[in-house]
Amino acid sequence: MHSELFIAVIAGLGGMLGWGLADFFAKKTIDRIGDVQSLAWAGVFGSIAFGIAALYRVLSGGQLAVPHDATAWLLLAFFGMLQAAVYLFAYNGFSKGQVAVLNPVFASFSGIVALVSILFLGEATNPLRIAMVALVFIGVLILSMDIGALRGRRMPFVRVPGFPQVLDRPYVLRG
Image (cartoon, rainbow, N blue to C red; front, side):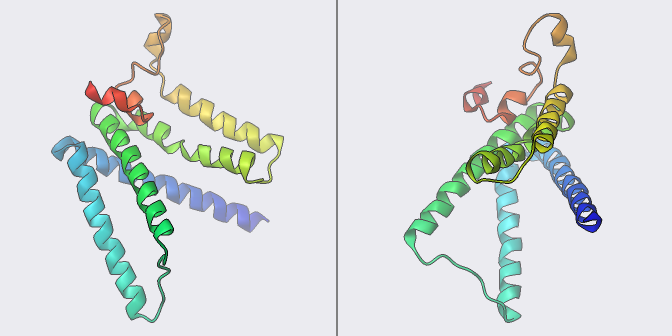
């Protein structure tokens, strides 16, 4: 039991470090060449890395699971476009604001997966787990607040540069 918890904690810390570094370097690239260009180049380099890994697997005797029907390919394309849109909004937000404030908001979207798993997929849970997920979301929101805006009774989140874009509100891209 303790070894499973240890593995989970180490994996979580590794994931935070990996995603944090990725977003840090994404911000550096976005500031230098722009948000759309950064996303495009990330796609190019990611495809090259995937191609090399797939080629290695095939050449080493492994197999690749490739969809054989049009429905699967259409769903892959659809969800790929959705993911590209999400990253386009996030990168646009990163170009306008501080990644240290925006990254936790963007990263907390994985909590939606936990919520969907609990509500629709029958994921086993208990009140303590639900309270912990809620605590994480509350913490992320507090970290992302513009505390000075609280004195003026304005919405503290909207004033943080890049926050609306990271929340995937496409109509904000005009600004």
